[in-house]
Length: 276
Image 1 (cartoon, one colour):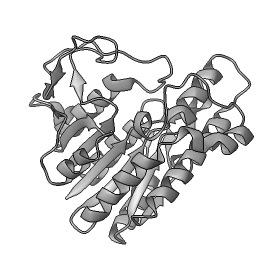
Image 2 (cartoon, rainbow, N blue to C red):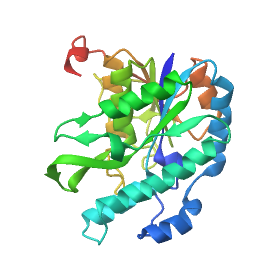
Image 3 (tube, one colour):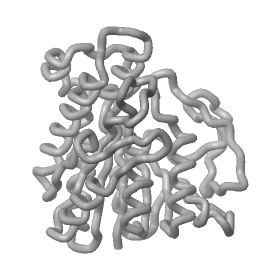
Image 4 (spheres, helix red, strand yellow):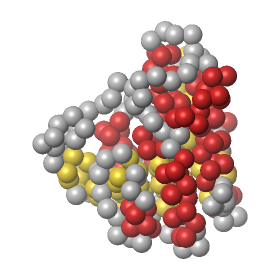
């Protein structure tokens, strides 16, 4: 059973803090202040107990290491796309080192293996590396990053390849059985529960439903709306798809046991697979 699991930037980092260093030198010095090591350790300890029962591909979000710098770049501050890449690479290195204390995990850089064409991503090099690692019974980990673009975009000759995009690309190319995203809320709600106390939790979300998605000002990759859209595509491809609260360690055990908490995402369009 192949599981593609995204660890959201909102849980592994303090994504929505209002301040973050703007130079690579300062990011390297202060990075530890923005990473939730205790949670990452807890997740890794659960994965270690299931490593002989499942095949797992991990992706993780960029949190402030990507979103904050990308926002400032778009505002015209003297930051380059390569600075964003270096920043998220610092986060990935620290996440990978932490996970490696429990599991045999190997990082793959999207910057070196993915190209944006203007309407899609070329990911065969990335997928081939993932396949080799899985064959060696290792756990690949990918992360949100900037990648080279064949067209000029608002990021110049680069574009953003998010941890969410990675879930779809891997699920599609490797025919994942489960695609799951660990976030900082219980799942999908009728509206943003962080803003509206009367928001209602949805144990199931389908392509026939509509909710009022909200995107935070520091999120440059689409927020919950993008996650749901991607998981609907994963569902159309035959994967079981879930969004759950990744701050609760027990939820990872439940996911690996086949009894996931959170929201189940289902694409009920009979022609959906042909469209993906």
